[in-house]
Length: 275
Image (cartoon, rainbow, N blue to C red; front, side, top):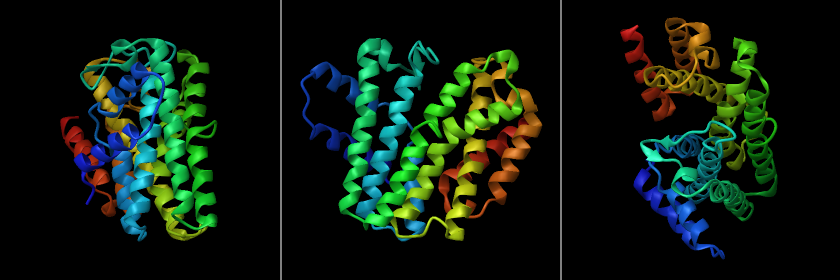
């Protein structure tokens, strides 16, 4: 079982073991680490590790690494140059709590810390498994993942945003990290990238990412935060988007093996009844 409080303690403690010259940067990173969150990606990673028989110590290391990547992305996404958000989960965003320069550096350091943590895995698994996992990790972050999705969103004018482009953006920006969360534990366990189970779990991750985005769009709809042409929900229509998300999620292999997937399906079912 994934224990959120234990994970939070381990994540903070692992950072406190590091040394740095700036106490203000340290405080900013601790602010990011201690921000409220569901820890979806480490939860998925933990449950994938259980599914593929991954050693708990290896799973724990990777769970910290994937969450650090996610926290990096949140800090940078909130900056004025990107989403320009003043609050996240009811608290001031990091650049509002501190300043833009510190927020930028804190995001950089979180990503650096994520890589350092991931490299600890090199001494915990065989070289071939580590190399395969590292390749997926880098893809999830870079031009074929979160950074590429963010860049595509920035360069696409609102008036030219269509369903195909927006789905591509969200697959890269959001789905790639969910894919890494569930695929990498399988690779670290020694499972071949070509194993049918890895293909199945990748399909599940993409379905989960799509459903997660619809749920996020529904939250934006309630808060009136975004124009409808900037999200999948607005382009597809509320009922059709929810129905497609539920179908893809529930039809994917291993759906029942992941507790966040069942929680997400229940949320969408609730929204469907409201339609």
